[in-house]
Image (cartoon, rainbow, N blue to C red):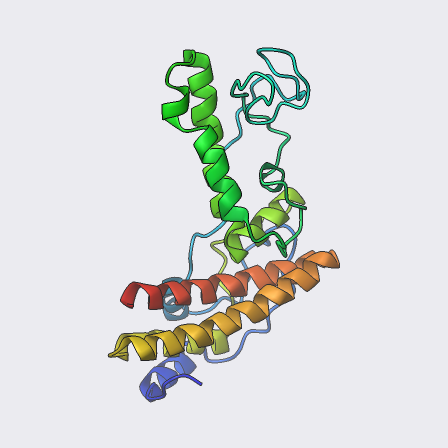
Length: 255
């Protein structure tokens, strides 16, 4: 599939990864370092395509107002901003990113108006609209705006959305963990070589399309595993998705 001409690289990789390491099922809790780890050269090459694309680390403010009653007028059902008096509400830590956009908590987002809803919330929380309000309310608006941005960035990408769903299930994914798979390593090397050697946008777009297909395969694998509560397989799918998403980014940089 990928551009050949990586014979020397293959021989180097074969020597570096002298034998294929059988990959155990990924545990729900990060396992202790295995005695069978890939060589330093394998780790270095795989590190090229390791991204830090995960659920945002922003902590939600633990302020009052989580009951749904407006702090200003007392109206019930207040969310981000009060529908009755228009007051901006403090961040409610019990509200997840899917609720912010009125979506079901699931991987396959069926609503295609995520960007539109994001822009609507940003307009309501824009500094120009709250500049005349109290210092407390301007602070609420700044927090809510940052939260909406985090929510949109997380849900708009398959990998970060998958990691966030696992996070909501109480499952931590070690994003620094290297996959012990020489075949994947060689594929990433070939992709990188093809990207570096590409001399026109048409070639780069073809490479990008091929990588996106691989990413989509593992995206479907995650959805199937997550729906079945097979979290070991879901974690493995996110680890694969990370490498392919990073490879897509490499093509975007050169386009």
